[in-house]
Image 1 (cartoon, rainbow, N blue to C red):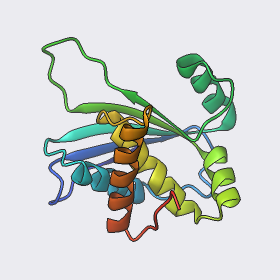
Image 2 (image 1 turned 180 degrees about the horizontal axis):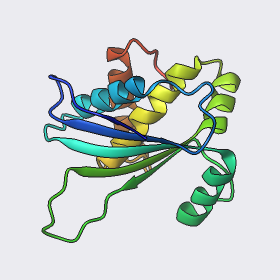
Image 3 (image 1 turned 180 degrees about the vertical axis):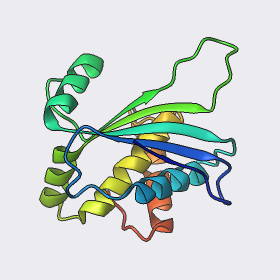
Image 4 (image 1 turned 120 degrees about the vertical axis):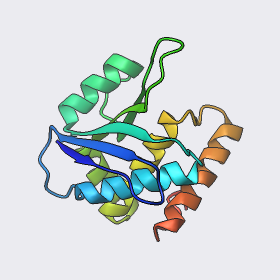
Length: 161
């Protein structure tokens, strides 16, 4: 597990990274921290924040997706926003589970650099932790536009083109 502190541009972003899958092809912890901080800045999240990212294999990704979403397949990223009792303050945003084999397969199929796809899914997951969603068309357009703007600040092309 790796812990990363915030930068001057982001007040106290703390990212915990854990691996339950081989690290081959998975970007460095500093990259995940950079992507999380970019997502927080882009969403104008001004408070300190903490989250965990777990890199999982296909078996765990499938089990999590089945248990929490009722879908019997591994998906690229799952977001688990923190659920606290009313009145309890916390810096914790929640957890992300990123399925390494699915990310690698999608990047190949879509002709995208693997690193860029990890960046996109990290930003996407963080936005979910902040309450963004894409269940209806209007929300999806808003979220996708924000993702595109955030990724552009990182020099990454529009993932929806």
